Image 1 (cartoon, helix red, strand yellow):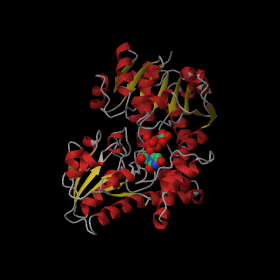
Image 2 (spheres, rainbow, N blue to C red):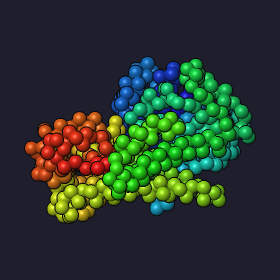
Image 3 (cartoon, rainbow, N blue to C red):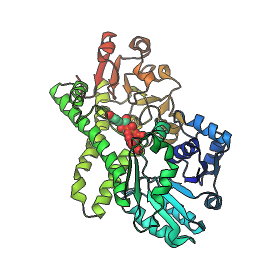
Image 4 (spheres, protein in one colour):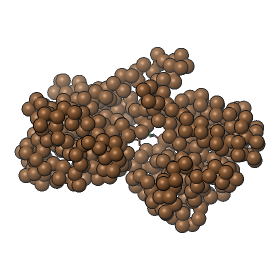
Length: 441
Ligand code: UDX
């Protein structure tokens, strides 16, 4: 078993640390945020991620998982270091901000006195890993014996534990200039996964970095494709949900990620496609990715369209209207509100003079921090009380299973807009509601 340090204890780092311990390794989670560490140490996950708390608690209990803010402790304890810190979008630019990744290498490398392998997991602009590898070797007392490889992470929030322990594939980019130990070490660390015949793709650093960004670009493109079809369906009086089912039967297309609605958000897809365009521009390949501008534009247009639909439902003006917003997280089974379409729409509607009341089963605290001026309810009933229109913007099960007959008596107008096409138009219409979906008549 290996001694492992994991830098960063956000959605990616905390999950990776807990799952590496679950595989039997001795793991140290490292972060600069003491309050996060205190929570994790007591077995509390600082965000909502189904199943993670159980894995965390179990491995803290066995002593295989500990946390620290000390890089010295990490450097003397671990032979393998994973870097899972954030790479947010730079303020006012498309490019990714890699300062947190740089800071880990700058803080850790000078403390490495024996051979070590650093595996980058964060999503970074192509070329970052090669630069970091050179820097790590230059700064480390162990010098050329420090190997830096890239092992991108493909986990989805809401399925983070499952995706880490049962990934579709493992990808490893190795440094041709490095000491060449990374592949062997990765095979040891992931031995249990490889025994399950999970595809293991070993490549160069640049390809590994690009696998991640291109996978996210493809997923974003798929969603914007169906949302573009949704615009055409709206104009033509067609139904995008039936269209998605029908084209999705073709294996070459596939039904997954063809759900039209208010579009994609979160901490990954929006900023990753923008960072990808910015990096391609730096490399002189900007033309190759101009289509991603359109992918981004289609996505953002869905939010504007939702605001328009809410305005239409309120008789042409939102001024003085009461709007209930069900859902705040960027997707169900997550409390993440980063670039959430739901909150963006709620904010725009409020700016047009409506009183907006938001309810989300898990994302209330995060929403309040990001949008303190919106109204918040403690449950669905309170959110829809006296509403002129109800918007479903995150498809939590609780909302998908909402009974039109139960909420009907609470609202001022029986009007619902299904921003995720997750409700039954027939059921709502039969209960006397005006139902509008996105791209379906
Ligand atoms: C994504 C990638 O899926 C994952 O592989 C990568 O590691 C990180 O980025 P995540 O951000 O957790 O994961 O969410 P994902 O499930 O991909 O959903 C992203 C957004 O797209 C959500 O806002 C979701 O509501 C939206 N979406 C997804 C759609 O609008 N329609 C779809 O059909 C699918």
